Image (tube, rainbow, N blue to C red):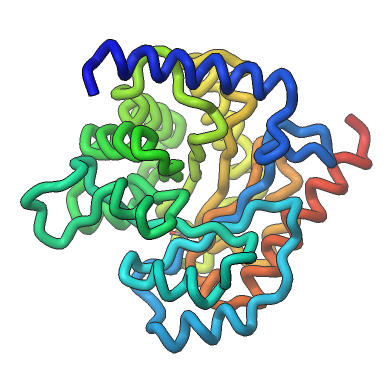
Length: 297
Ligand code: 13P
């Protein structure tokens, strides 16, 4: 597509997003609580599960609250199996764990955003710390992926987070600012639909360690992320972006974490392999939103 056509398309998308925002985008807004952001709980299965295990998972998955958007990101090869096992009426959405920013080409072992979309993925995890740390993915590559995902109609779940040494030397916010700014640097103006971007704060020291960020640590990091988004795209826009916490999230700690105003859900690794635990985290998110609605404002 030529540049000017792309620009026109983006302006039209932004105008539509603003109209929807004004009128109430029932598909995404959590209308029951008056919030502009529908809670989201996403499972990152990482390199786990076989076809048989996927079918068992789907069989054992309890009914999930419709007030929370539930997403499962299996290994890409299992996307069609998971879709089939969940069934066409399932409210659970599919996501991928990674993508290449090119649409196609000589990139052995990779999957493009249009391919993932074709496999019914609606979301894609981008910039996960395991991709950054183990596979050498840099900020500019992450930025290309965010742009390409949005262009293909996939919603990126952009992961950012600090290592323990950075936290201990007081560099957490600097790291978050740097990763966020870089990852969004390819987007330019006008901004994408805020409902299409999800940011997950995943402190690396809390991933797979059983050590979770405290409610205060998660809350202040997420508030910082929203503030930074507002600096880039304005408050009305930033207020509609969903922010997740990831890092040893479990049914046991989800309720406390979900009490933070900027936390809209979770990106769950280990606990999401167990269908009951995943469902309990979804339930915790549902209950936290209901409690916020009832509590003092
Ligand atoms: P754990 O929940 O296993 O700590 O993993 C978090 C994560 O990396 C999700 O993307």
